[in-house]
Length: 43
Image (tube, rainbow, N blue to C red; front, side, top):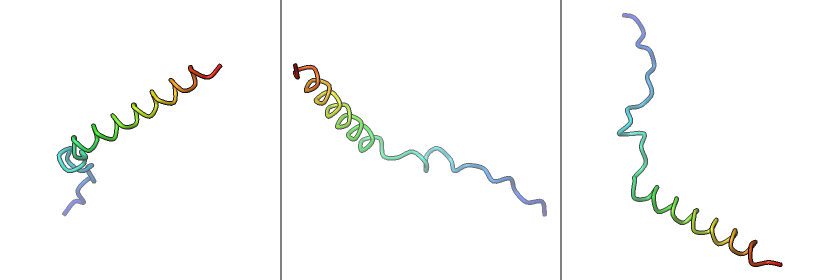
């Protein structure tokens, strides 16, 4: 028996839940935009 080459997990199991991922990304971009706006408002 030849040892099977270790393959990475299939994409379906590796991918996180898309809804959760999008929510986190949106929250991050929102906070980032807020920080940028706060920096721009400062004199």
